Length: 223
Length: 413
Image 1 (tube, rainbow over the protein chains, first blue to last red):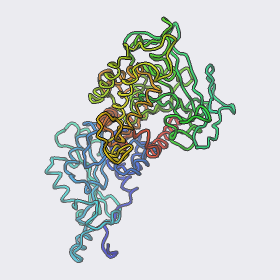
Image 2 (cartoon, chains in turn cyan, yellow; image 1 turned 120 degrees about the vertical axis):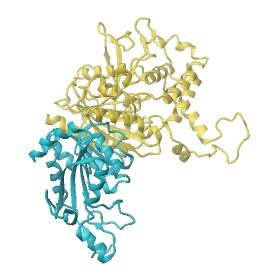
Image 3 (cartoon, rainbow over the protein chains, first blue to last red; image 1 turned 90 degrees about the vertical axis):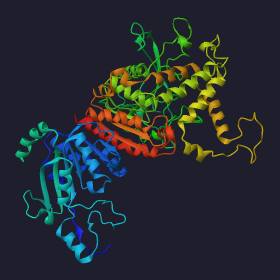
Image 4 (tube, chains in turn yellow, green; image 1 turned 45 degrees about the horizontal axis):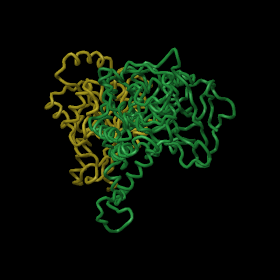
């Protein structure tokens, strides 16, 4: 990997955690897909008294979660969410992982099956530096946190914010809120977000359940 | 010596006799099996089949010391042919230690310097707890098949009574694999407030049809043995040493079949392959039964088993497994497991075809659905169903943090 190449910068994990936590109400039931060592879920339990559940593939992370008292199921997101019953959670969280699964669309469908709302954080490969890198160097983008070359990167899908919104439209999912993350800061009404955001957080829910949608609105207004 | 409790008076141990001896192998050192009589008249045990028995003797062992708050007790439920002798040795010249010895000891998965560990032989067993080989007080002869049919629920009720009689109000955790895992699940369903945590290894909420099928063959093997005599094979002067009377061949055959189900295709291939026992050439002798190493191994397992197990007891225990079906008993798995606040650690093994991962996933799904605290892993091992007994380090890596976090949380509240 060339050192000169632009690396899409991963916003500080703690900041993204904070942003995710701001979308979650006290005592909600939260499922974190790819929960790592249980850091976010531990905070949701301790600070917001949420009922929590993690899913994680990496064995060391699973052990780490158990050590924090975070309940975790070891599972491969590419194999679906078979153990998770319909509507078992209020919120399902998927942070910086959607671009790594084999079938993102299927996973989004599954998430909205098991949870009323879904929080997704995705990298924005529409960022101007990524475009510039591709234009000037003719090379595929690489991220700081995942500094892999194209042939061994876990980032299977490169998407921009616009691409993501297209998919959401096609799936009849509603975007409840969206926060572009620009230089580590969430900016709710950013101009030219698809050029400037490193990543973006979306709160999603099915359009098919208007009752749930209306009950969610007052909560979002409180933010 | 790790004999912190006497048979009669449970006492939170402060005395020096309760200290862990520094065993040379890093384990628990010398231990003694203890006995306790429960369900004495006028309070017999009402079994799930409706009949009553009592009094019931329970054989159990303990390791470590009960804390003054009595909040550090773990109960280990043994599997089908296990016993109360979980770890350590009964005498210095004992050939073999307890059945989970490598998992129990200072710094090990179950640490007697932190926890008070209890293991008891199950009701219906033949290693000291009341079972078909025990004397029926009404006749003065062994129960034999006069003992009513027993269930996993009955076993658990006896465990629970033992724990209560030891002065423990709430266990820190119940741990078990296979039939032991079934007991752990049944325990938390029947007594939801009896423990802070459940560790369920290579188990299921019901025995699969395949499992019943293998038990059926084992049962048949015992019952067609001419020495079975409807279970009435004990000598007039009381049961002799195992292996000297009764359906020896049937029981050995039952064990051979069952033993295959505890292994995996990979483990058999690796351990034995097609290798011959004593020769490089095929013998072309039809009646030679131990020509291949795997044949010899199974015969050896059968032979060893009849030296330590009673055929009637085996029939009772496999029937209890056959009957085990939590969804049927409690209406649904959610009903069964949703009443407790205990946290669960569940593992299955990728090569276990007797208790496949799909059955553990059913339990996990029910726990998630009811919002319980559950961690689940499908672990990798070549050893099939026996993995939980053999993959010690893999298990310790999970159980040690799980238990210490459970203890920490339980002391916070």
